[in-house]
Image (cartoon, rainbow, N blue to C red; front, side, top):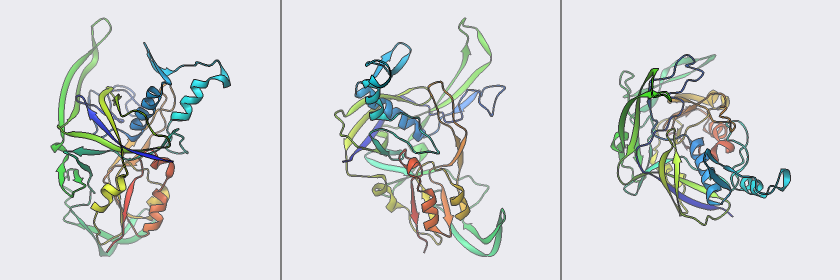
Length: 348
């Protein structure tokens, strides 16, 4: 039997979600670290999943807090007799999240993409083509080795950047700046001897959510929970949130899929970060999208996976074979973690 919950994450102060654009050195900046970093609006779905798995272990009594962190203690001896370890893996799964292989999250059957609740109304990122009409024209365009009928976007001006907008379950719309308030901070990093470091100046842009707003998602479990509220941390600075649970029959699809209207061409509107397979790319007539790079931790030593490029929420894939595109995007191991969620829309 499955149990579904509506989960609210209520920020207790400003927050910083780092993604790939943090201050640290990485394989794109090996010589020096960044001096400026801006939070993303939403945390990565893999980070939400990690927070949730940890919270389940804490609430179930499998994880112990120590001076240098929290981990699952060995309570029943070595090897196969460790009852606490087996209970912990049953609750939260054993392996780290993977973009490529099946994922075992223990009693977590699925989480939905994050959205925003403001004044009791649910909001998600609107389709990036909301203001434009894609139309076929009597011309061809070249995409790699392919030639196909060309399309153009009526009303689109490439010189003007279109700001992302939120769309509510009641069809109301808000700009992101209506709910997200920037918090600027600057500083200078010090050594342990309180000396200034070379290239140590930094500038950070965090966000605060406006009052009566929270991050929200739907959670499906194979077991019923005995707790309702928890204190959790999330993000690059371990920002504090109150997590509130309530059982529900709602789902992400029921809440939002009715909002996205038909246009001339068949298309798919993405509601989460989405890994686009080669098959989906080959079937696409046009991809109206923003793309960001992502990596996840592979082990306790902080080793990261290779870099993956995901289409952002609100992106739109135009296709000449809607069924084939839906099949290519429907990757169950990703959808369990709140990725690759979308609404297919048949054209007029």
